[in-house]
Length: 256
Image (cartoon, rainbow, N blue to C red; front, side, top):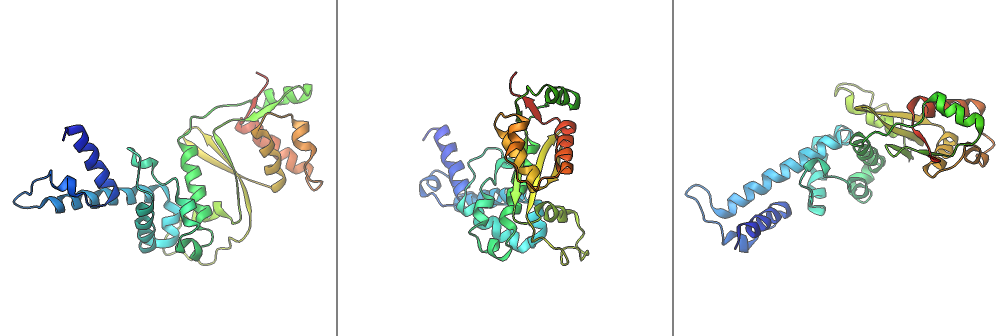
């Protein structure tokens, strides 16, 4: 067997955690360690590194369910989704979907949405920021009523059934705090997540603001975006939304 083929088979064996008799036949026992145990050591080390990568990405999930349950979760996730990535930091993109059917997702009803929030946070953090129109540029186009706008790619518009950003913040609460026990989370939430320099910023939106902003995912004018919004939208909501769009510079002129 050529070295390249052996390396590929070895990597597949380590990632899958399954024995490979063909591979074992190519590895000699050492005086201190048999070939089968040597492969197990590599597999165990790789599983530990995957678990640590998941813990790093899903810090709030880990904080809320604790070490024992998180160990069970990562064990089950790794068994169902072996990593295809060379960079372990890319691992974990199916966690929200997985939690939707996992028993821990049933015990903690908010967990799948929290995992979705954490994965979106990771993706936005690693995006290249694209800067849109500033306040003055935006105002000038609005006055002329000639602009068609679209959101920059480095944002996420998120809607959850629970107060997910508040649950996420609990990752920084000390273990001896009783905030988590008294926390109310059963309320829907609309979130704008933005790449801002080396940070990820969030704005909590009203449902009306979120619906308006969603329309800018495809090129449209302000008048078209606002036209079909529910009659409950207030001038304060519109004013605050314009302030966010201008100060965060997240709208592009789609006519250019």
